Length: 192
Image (tube, rainbow, N blue to C red; front, side, top):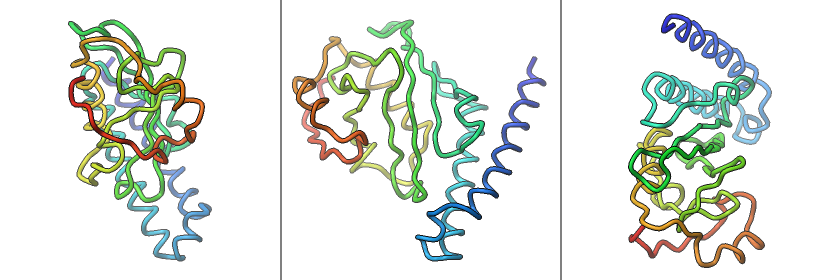
């Protein structure tokens, strides 16, 4: 069984390498980023994402698995399947996290949000899937990774003592941008 998993990973990695080549030569980002310098930035981002993808496949955080179908055609958008940690309010619940990476990753944080049918009810998670978590915006560092973001989100959910939406959920969901990174978050609550 393990061998077939390795073959699958090898096949997926091979697909990503070939998609990287086509992205590097045809991406609008390359032209906008200044010719050859843009190709270098794109190649650097692709290399980092491939490394993180393999790390997530080989050593995922507890309760997390990469949705392999989500990366078959592109390396810049991933879905990570998540299960609530045992002994928490979310035990046994299943969620999905959507990661979108810009051409400036890892210098620019990924866009991360819950997606799908089940959005966790949590004081820092809006009903549209947007997550109020400082490492996703102003506290982002290129030293962070998809795995560290996943661990932070698991920790945030696991430490929750009461399932409830943020107090401004209705207003925010009606008025926000679709991209949670465009929100000017106000980080004021460490109690969850």
